[in-house]
Length: 110
Length: 114
Image 1 (tube, one colour):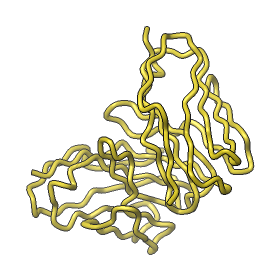
Image 2: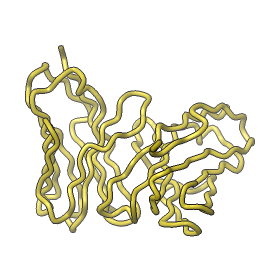
Image 3: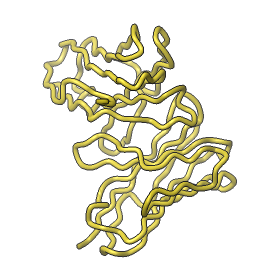
Image 4: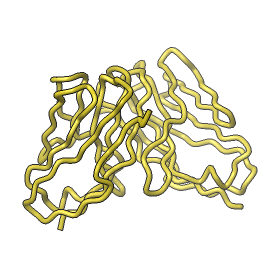
């Protein structure tokens, strides 16, 4: 059964630092992967979608990479800001049933 | 363009009551889905639909029914509410079958069953 793991579950980082969030999956077959942000009490906001044929996607201060051979994806956040504090989830798109990790709760310290 | 909308935002039910959670999208998306989000469990897929008239079960379908009579709407029915169904429910949609297309989420419905 495909599993998506996000470690650590929580992370605190001083403002201004660059940081990396990790997502790993058990089956390294060809999949698309999507990163989301969720603010407390809110829905999920899509950040980046990496197609299976791509290695990375960039949007502003965010860069997501996908390494199918190792079953890993990373979300890089440059020059972190307090407004980046949220829970970040990755989701695998193997077929019609999307599989979510449990997320990393990020807290940016002012 | 409202995106994905969900009603109600909050609901309290007594055990055994039934209700329908509404979900609508105005993006002409073929694929729609329902998730529940519980602390420590993450998001779990309840039911999904790849087009009008087509639905299928996800990871946790028991106690829930769905139908898809139009492209725009995908209601989730709780037949006889149980305390274990206390959760936050999210509806999502995408242009086509999930693989490779960006998912858009609604704001959620927070349901409490007493």
